Length: 179
Image 1 (cartoon, rainbow, N blue to C red):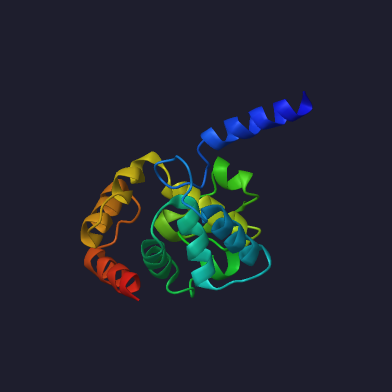
Image 2 (cartoon, rainbow, N blue to C red):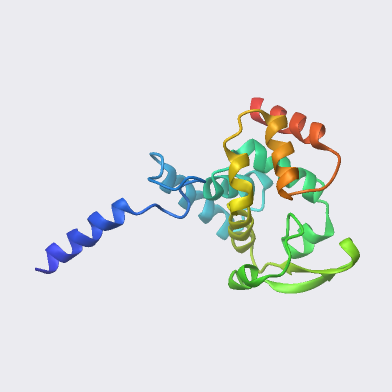
């Protein structure tokens, strides 16, 4: 009887979409669970390279690595921004309920007329929240665009950024894609 119950739960679990299975939900691609777990372990064990961070966010959010890497590069000034170095906040993510669930505390920032930004206790918490933000409904239509310029225009229109550097972001994204 106990074995039948376990098999029933296992069968049900196989039908449910995993939270990190990409923007559209559904079953993960072959090897994806292993990849997500290994990049999570790298972050948890102190691997602070931007490639590992961006790879993890890419796997969890479903946004291709080259686009996540271009976002990270612009938003952190290639890792030099104070918000990234001191608070592990790559995109100026506000201190909201979801950030608090990741263990983030609030930190005052003078940008945008003064806002409270999230300060994450670890890179894993930061990456999880970054991926969660990327999966918000308003960014979903952008994920399926193949053209880099169209993707960046869509992200700007959806509110991801407000700067004028759409073409530069698209070029960087394309360069990272081809490397």
